[in-house]
Each structure stands twice: as structure tokens, then as C-alpha cells.
Image 1 (tube, rainbow, N blue to C red):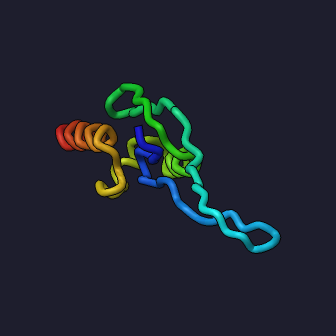
Image 2: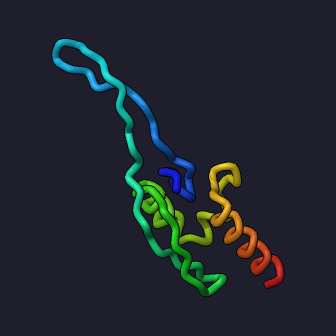
Length: 95
């Protein structure tokens, strides 16, 4: 599985280690990914996602998984998150 946040699309970045003598060697900056279980109140289910710590703070700030997914861009979401968003739109449109 790739090292990519399922909700924000944040992934691995590259850069340099720079020594005191200014020698540069390539390195990778890995995102702070966590396996979390988030609750969708409209669907009444738990969903497991591998998301970054900053995405978890964003979900809390927006008021939960449902409001976050409704405002999220579809380009950033993983296929599993897109499926949850589609189900959420379906439930909210019929209610």
C-alpha cells in the first residue's frame, strides 16, 4: 500500500540531507500516517482509513467525517473514500 493519506492525498516528498560541509544526499520526507476508525453519523457505520495527523485534525475541525467528505475534492480522495462519499450523498439526497 502506498504512503498516501486517503483523505487529503498527502504523500511522500523528497529533498536533501545537508551536512555541515554542505554535502547533499537525497532523502525522503514521509507523511505522518495513522490507521484510524472514523464514524459516519449519516450512514451509521465505522470506516477504517490510513490518514495523516493533519487530516485527522481537519476532520475534527470540520465537525466529523460526513462534513469533511462533503466538502473534499474528489481528486484528493482514495477509491475507498470516494465510495463512502458516494454512499453519503445518496443517503443525504433521499433524506
